[in-house]
Length: 395
Image 1: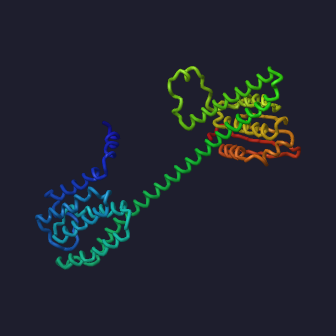
Image 2: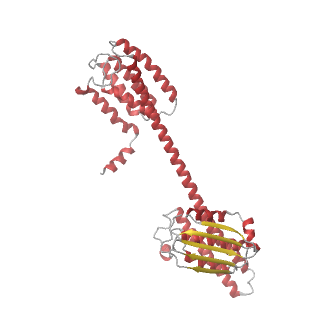
């Protein structure tokens, strides 16, 4: 098994199990002859050999480390009592080193009554220092007791800093996650708006036109075929959107999946002609002009250009039905330029009546790629949408 596998297995254990080796290590080290009498020493008491009370002191100092993260207050209280007994009896064991460790752990993991705990520890240190000063030979000065207290306070402060850092990191991750969710919801909403609005608008216009063609069966059949084709394209685009929500969707091996060919997930600029034909079949006269050759790699520029044309033609169908519309696309090595203009006063109402969600979404998409976007009415009463989209960017 690799070291990474061992690490993952170790992290699955409860925190008490993971903290047990630390307590056992200090307990065993305290009984080693070479380390006996070389531990933490506060005051000027002579070192004495271990006795029954020494075992109790070592147990209080080492064993509570098992719960230092689960019950930090209990661990701190027990270790503090064990440390006081250790120093007052003069054992000066290695286990005394656990007090700063426990203070760091408590400062990091204690959630409630933190100030009260700090005040109680500070108050409890005063009688301990006085008792050690009286029991000692007088070699310990008050400055040395104050210095040791500052060391303990520094350990508590280090734990508090770790806690604040951990909280700040958790809040940062939560903000990033919230921003990511918001951005993803916005992206999905834009895609859904583009797909549903365009295709449904075209289908509604085509269906309404079919009502007046009952006396012309051939034209009626063409109109109904256009509605069916538009519906199929809407289903295809919605499947692509579903793939965006769930990348594993449709990865099975069913018969339908083998029989139904998959279309490209990202619409290319070349598919703009399909949009133009679809809009023409809905009764909108559209002139289409494409200049230049698309570069080998356009990044997200081709998709954004497709959406610009799609939204502009949708607005033309909804608010300027029957007005002549012009679609112009120009390719260069560095950018794609799109211009969609509609004659007549009907397109002016598009900006006033529409919610603007589609145009606002287009502006955001173009801005992300570092391009320019504009949409507005002209002096002749028409409405024009222009976009300059740098090629090679990723939206």
